[in-house]
Length: 126
Length: 371
Image: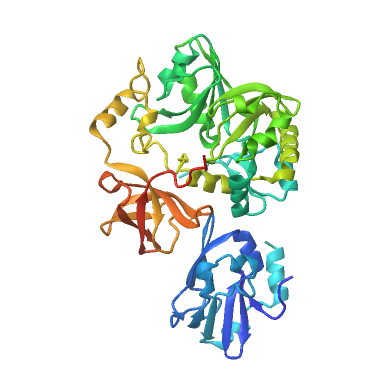
């Protein structure tokens, strides 16, 4: 089960809307697929992201994976705790393992995201 | 280009065991093998602190037998197998005429006229064919036992204590890089004190049909003391910490043993010709322009296979393997760098996603087990 109050992408990222800001991370499914995460590279605060553009990198022991912005916007802050504790993405992907706080540039991009039921369908279909 | 059909991968003879243990199964070198069960880091740490159990059924086992078996191998390989005592083993390589590495191997002397060569899964066929061709003029025959042999390894400080109750022979009497025949879990077996993790441990060869019986017995024997099954993922991080080369990463047809910092393996002093001798003598005489070294990253980032190494800001080398070391808690890598930049203490950089990240040349291995 994925949290019902979040929005999702088919790239296995989640988006939590908090007022006129959003918080972004990767799903438990993504974290499990990656395995033990040992390094997370985040953009600098202030960077403007376009939807679907690469915003960072997550590395497991074995592999390097790009992270894609679910929506466009300005980066307000990043989760600095991941620099020293990247394993938080595995242990608490929807909580302490969050990645970015963003000010969306286009609210319409949020309404285009998947809801929990639709995302669960994506996972089920592999 | 035409599409060549992908051959159906060969499942490990005990792939059912791995699936029951929750393993993620991947195709590796034409085989279906477990890459991890729980997590790579936990498996890695279990091997360093207790022990891990590895299914290595994909490795190639080639038995060379006959009155000239030793001489035939001396002519085929860069080492001197006739110098081995019966029951001992050596690290070896098979090179082409240019001194390029076809594969790295372990050679076991099973008897006066009987040897076993263990090759990497990805090269088992190539090595088998090359050896068959090279021994053709000798009184020796090659028997490719790869598909008839099951291989289970136990590696880690508790290996001997876990395996001994199952074994008919005194494991302590088998020296490092030794091999003995015996019975393990009621099965006729060969027990070798070799491995690819940097830990003490044993590799047990049995008839392929008995691999499951052996696996089950070893896992049950060690489980109470912390034995865990370990997949190919942790096998790679373990060997990297131990500074052991991997064919396809550190070794290949375009590298010589001298470049791979393994010149000591080449026995130029042995009598008689061997394939690659002239080329290797020349490399030994002239020296090498690049060498395999260890790197410790001194800034944040992880170096990976294929990333450029910068010396004085300019691309000059290449990373062959890299990861975040679970034991050391820092990013480590092996890389080819120009000889002038190969001394420990030299500062270089690894280009990671377009940006230089500082790295220091350090001695290999990164990890050495406590004495």
